[in-house]
Image (tube, rainbow, N blue to C red; front, side):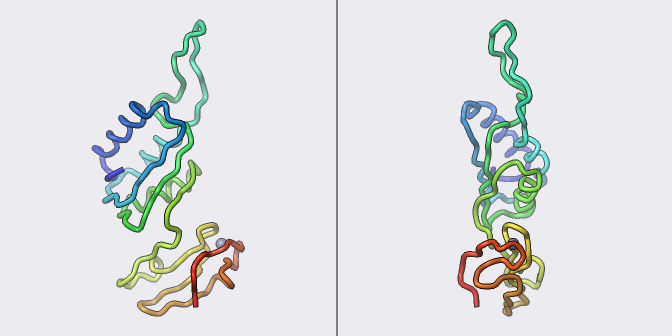
Length: 158
Ligand SMILES: [Zn+2]
């Protein structure tokens, strides 16, 4: 998925429902996507749930929904996702469509933005590390475990 825009969406839908229709699962690679406005359309496309197989007179005619992906998927993201491409994995996770994979501890730097320069628990969203310019403070974990949900946080923190 190159951009969160109409040409990228059309390419994805054409490829997924065309040459890749027989695949068992999908990896939606959003790394380095430049953004736009497509998070809900893309999440809707990926959230198909098969509810019917059409077999009139023993003849396979397909399934419904025909125009949505209804098999497993995962979303791959990175720190290079920009704007709506950063929002889409959040939408995908909120709709519980599939798994989000990639980097868990992304934060911005060289800018004053306490919320987005912090590190949060990938499981429960608990604030783990507060940052203020070049000062960091571990606040939500102890011995590499989240204080709220006990999720193991990989890395080395002082
Ligand atoms: Zn947690």
